[in-house]
Image 1 (cartoon, helix red, strand yellow):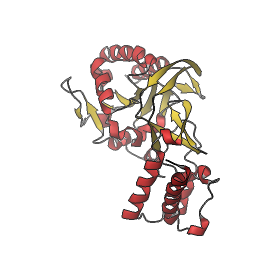
Image 2 (tube, one colour; image 1 turned 90 degrees about the horizontal axis):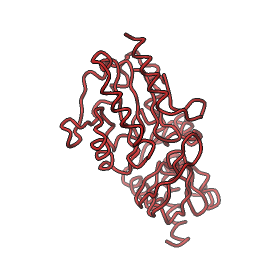
Image 3 (cartoon, rainbow, N blue to C red; image 1 turned 120 degrees about the vertical axis):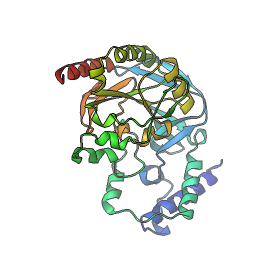
Length: 310
């Protein structure tokens, strides 16, 4: 794709974005200012080439994993001639031609032409302007984060309500099926587990978590649940991972994971375990003050919470 085609597609995307904001053609950003206009960026991009993904533990790179073409990452920035993505805590840069950025912009333009959205309130647009400031958060598709309203919820099962219809489990041990767990709303604690089959440290920790989970008493299981937030490349990889490690807990359906209120608890890397209460308040995290302390510490905290709530 040549430079003129690239500029043309970017201009089309700009037109769609500005139309939403009530602006006019004469207000189009120049080619130099396009990368700085976050309103034009998609939430994520798919990388079309094989690449190396750094494995980071305790803030240091300890190795790398070869990732085949087709991996999708949250988009952090559009650069002149390229993009920067959040690869689970590592910033990777790719040439525009090595991603599907232009295809996504063209799809956005076509969708806008088919169904022009109503102008968003000015406060909402302000929220969107801040969406890239957090170094680890997945870029939200909508300006209003469902998780932000949880603190004001009077019901202790606010998280359970948000997850209705979004959970799956290996009920028969062979394939994932939708899980509607009526007991989830009564749980005091939810352990959100960010993990992936391609992650070496995850494959080391997951069996320990499975063993720990199996050793809990019936009374303990009435107070908590673990929910997998997969960072795998596709739904099949997630399902295979759950089968291989015999995960007894549910998972967010692969297509729901980044749009779930639980996505905001994601840290800079994996494995990451986060304990929250029914209203979404964080009780223990694998990251403390931006430093990685690991999931084992969180597991001990959960054990203490269960003991104290007896």
